[in-house]
Length: 392
Image 1 (cartoon, rainbow, N blue to C red):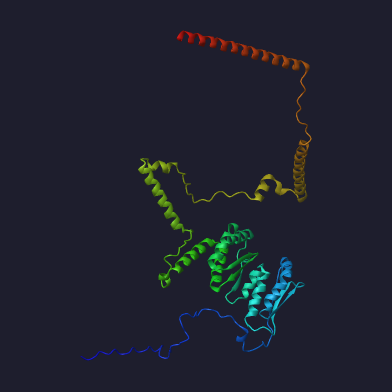
Image 2: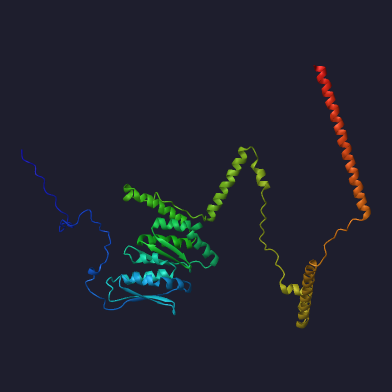
């Protein structure tokens, strides 16, 4: 028997030139961002100086002055210089000859932006890390009505900051709502989610819908079986409550049918229910009678034919009358404070004597009742004793 030899599998056209890389093992994380070190900058010092400046509000001046020494120390490590201009109310950062990372100046710019928007220093310094990014969402011009804007902004924070805390936990971001902006710090993917939540909230979509979706996504990500499947069937589908006129009428007819069926089941006549309902107005093609104009009313009263001086005199008279009524009313209100309260007259000698006599008579009656009661009690006792003797 001839030995069967298996032919070697031919490599695909794409993989023809691929070779095994002995250094590329499974334990290597290809997505890891390596820190940028001074040795990596082979070009040396930068040819030109780059700088960024940002304004800050007046209420942040005191805090920035206290913290500025710590800001300079944090930026000095990366070779970035910074200045605080209290006259113009601005902060600026610039590269120096010691700067080795070309991207750090943009990170420093983001840091001073965040500090101007109310973020604390210990939190703003984290933006200098490679895996951190920031986004300042402007919400001031999204809602015209001020009251509505304040309500919707408060909705992002939630009762006792619960909604904001939920957003922070689910997205691994730091969120600060300040004035007409929302400052966010975190990974790039999460920044996108937070921006979506904030903008939807300002468009009158409650954050709880997005939070529910994020919670479900978080749980689904734990299951490795669902890694290649679509998650649409698990995610909630929130429908708008606004119905078309045809849908509204259909719903109304359904309710009426249900009522009729319920009345039939109870043994009641459905015709009686329709009688009790309000009768519709009879349709008439003729419009309602036109109301009289101001000129027509003036013609009826004769005011239209009066001279300008007479009209002015009439109006002045009306005004005087009104003023007189108001002044009288106010006088009456002021006079109420000076009206003496109704005083009770002191009792006369005869009234006092009458009261004393009445009190004495009442006491006598009470004493007589007490005596009668004691005599009755004695009689009852004697009767009880007699009965006991008879029984024995």
